[in-house]
Amino acid sequence: MHHQPIDPRSTDARPAAGPAIDLDHISRLYRTFAEDLDRARERQRALLAPPASMKAQLDDIEAEITYLLLREARPETVVEIGTFHGWSTTWILRALRDNGTGHLHSYDIVDHVVREVPDALATGRWTFTQGDARKNAERIPATADFLFIDAAHSASFARWYVRELFPRLRPGIPVCVHDVFHGRRALPFTEGAVVLRWLAERENTCFTASRARAPEIHDRLKDVKRSLALGHPVRESTDNPMIFFTLR
Image (cartoon, rainbow, N blue to C red; front, side, top):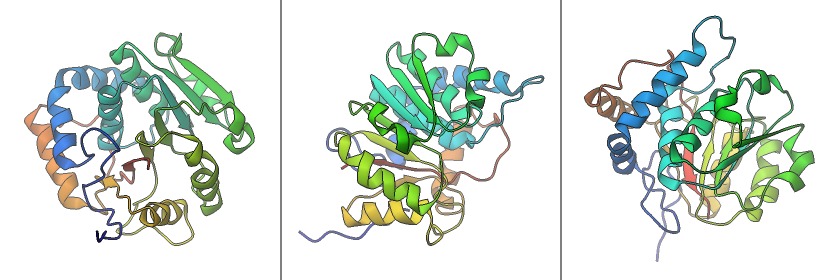
């Protein structure tokens, strides 16, 4: 059988089991979880209201897709590498709370996040480890069934996780990697270039709603959001470079 090389604009990222991570599927998730997502968005919005000091990193669409994939997957163990002030952390924890199950293990070299995540979200479902994830690799649970990466964006860091971390995790889990498509293409010698090459070598594909990379997908999701009365932004942003794929 002939396989096409990776096209990160493609919406065909098929897991070992279950539906594809594609535009149709993400649109269905928006519709399925619309009421819960609406409540989650308003609670996340409140975290940014003065006098809050949280610095939000994720665009609304990529944060919402992460939330929706978590709601669907209902993972028991989530790993987050890179927290900064905790915007992604709180989105993940909110999804786990709404699922009623799951524990998040987060890793970062700075500990801003511990002052930002509300106790109501953290208690009983969150473990934070400060330090370089590469030096704490033995503490990253191999049982993880959802992986979120938004840390160092260097090629060397990406080479570490595709060589050392990915092989420890089971195939079929959803993976989110931030800061790949700030432009039409990933820049050479960056994290994005490394992870896209790794995917291509395995004849795997990824989904992105990046406005820079896939404007038509971005616009169609905006239409879906408007149709569900979810169009009002939680935070203003025009940059959403994340990719989503299933580990193979």
